[in-house]
Image (cartoon, rainbow, N blue to C red; front, side, top):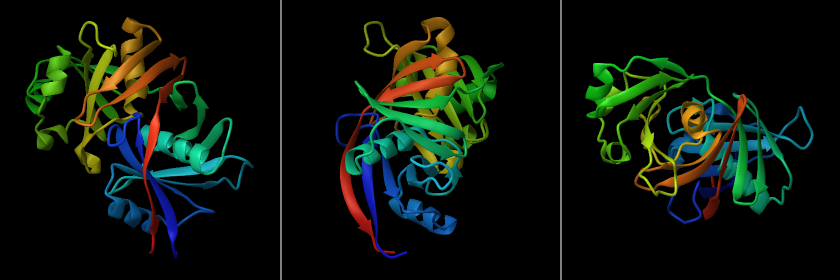
Amino acid sequence: MGSTAFVQVDAFTDVPFGGNPAAVIVLEGPADDAWMQSVALEMNLSETAFCHPSAAVDGEWDLRWFTPTTEVDLCGHATLATAHVLASEHGVTGEMAFHTRSGRLAAEVVEGGIRLDFPADEVTYVPATPEMATALGRQVVAAGRGLSDLVVELRSASDVRSCIPDMGLLAGLADRGVIITAAAEVGAAAEVVSRVFAPNIGIPEDPVTGSAHTTLAVWWAPRLGSAFPAEQVSARGGRIHVELLGDRVHLTGRAVTVARGMLLA
């Protein structure tokens, strides 16, 4: 394809080398699937985003996300990163609309960062099983299944932070990923903590996962109300403000550019 510019962004943080890194590539038009997958493998980040102006709707964008091993249906942090790049590097203003495998998504620069408008997950409570407890090495309080992920509530934020899961056993629990969560410590800035493991798509632990918070919004809203601050307590860490609005979820976070470069192939 010749030379192609990319930008690397840390999403859901305002501190370089925090949050979740994503590569963003803004193209003039559609690209070959095999090339995009090869680029994502080369970048070796949890997701690489590819976007270009939509041929169907003037002023809107087509957006796709790839892990190093596969294309995914929804990715929050790489959408936030893409909106950040379009606003800061390409001068895009107002609402940014993205056509994706998960339907139409929107992003907008607001006070406090960039607000994403995503579909809420559909969560069904399921029995907590011995297999869940064994895979996580922790007592399970409750569990539910979203469209792609298993959400598992643990007894405490400390249990979430200290969990060292068995990745082999964890891979058998869900199609995409396993979200572990608990109420945050009393007095903490966040009300909810979580971590996300997705070995089935080549991501042992995701640093900060926007899409997982479309599940956590539905899980926690009956107890915390429709809006609450959340923290993903991975090694890099990141914060998201979550608001459940019917069948949609608003996720607000910050992003920072950490690198720019050029692909030569």
